[in-house]
Length: 618
Image (tube, rainbow, N blue to C red):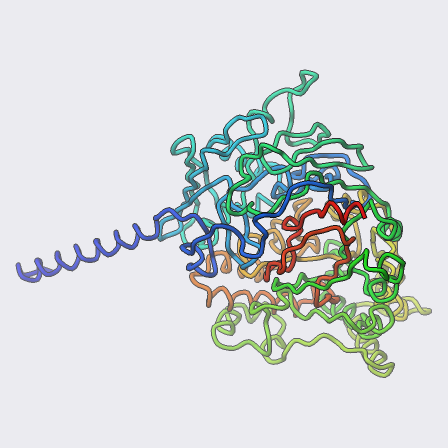
């Protein structure tokens, strides 16, 4: 279409205005930020001098005694092989630091650590991180862009979790010695610029060097050579499988960073290993081996804290309130086993779990039933799908259970013998419908005659209490059911290699789900040993929903998509949800100085505590 001169001038003016507005928007997006928040952008500009709950005058010194379970044979937490030592995690733990540190007081926010600032464009196609020029390894060498790039490339090769978490990162490029640009293979991944701050940074020069014997190091293998780190602690004395002591780095480069003010107060953190929790509790009661205990046994919390030190105040019990999403704790059945492939079978197994009786007998009625993979948050699905969530699910209607659209998801209740019998009758009907029938009291495959068998795998006697809520009823259904307890290291290896029928699994979530969902639920992760998709879920609907979550354009869309994912997981009965404790139950020897309040989101920050010398002596 031909334009008149006046129209052409008007068009040019409008185009120029549009270009100017776009440039202004891009400029605003690409401003350097010293904090990151995927939920509340105001957090990115709010002044941050320290966490408001810490004591900035907290003294340094003393030893924090903690415990580990089983054994360890490696200081490399990034690979599937080996059992890693206490104090190390896939995000670095006490030894290695990440680019930014996730805040403990508010969800979805991170503050500068190795990186002092970051920026990203409006289309989320990249993120640039500027490193703190004071950041140093423990040997005094500076942390550089080269270390960051090597860390990303290496972790994406050797770590199943990082492969999924950073799947959309195409490359990392050094802009200068202290500036790195991460380039993404797709636009619109709102979370990715922020979670690049979770990248643990490793020393390239150390890992590519040689050990004391002249042997070249290999980060793809387990090691018991204490690695070089950058964090507030380094590995001191250790005996593999017995104990490990972490020593505070006195000349730690990040001592005065806002995230560290009033924190990292213990001179030593010593972990002593135990084979079972009963022995660990006896050691706790004695004192000097375990100072702080997270009590997960409701029975013990109610009935066994009557020993002298607890009665006279030397040991204190306290319940902390947490605002985090409650982790889904559930019986996880290995879908790689053919007996669990049918949804009707999995629903029958859900009907066999008697939470109410278990809660009464073992937990004094204090635990609560989980009914969502995002419990205790606005991310949990409720009622029947409506609005935007319904629109999303309609795209997959032919691949979803029809009742998902018409019924509210409710777990079976067995609050009376009558209710339990009704649930078991319905379970028997579903099993028969799925091709299983009872012969001589045994549930067998109608075609092959093979008996239905389930072996529950556990790592401590706690597994006996947990499985007591389901094993008796499975046997009533004719299923040959057993419980096998193995040591902690064998348990970890078997779970990482998906060598089990059923376990009790945990699925922790944040208030801003995103790229990590691939590692939990994706088809690709199901075939990757060491991934968090321990159930082996391979569902194209879930794959699609996970991708949509990762590329959600705003918070409202993210909520609708997460509700949909939650609902699809529940209605397919991929796990049997168990229960949670509504508070964080801790007992500790009264030797600590503790800030008047703890972080509202995390509920507790042990790094903000300190030793009271006179109390420790007493």
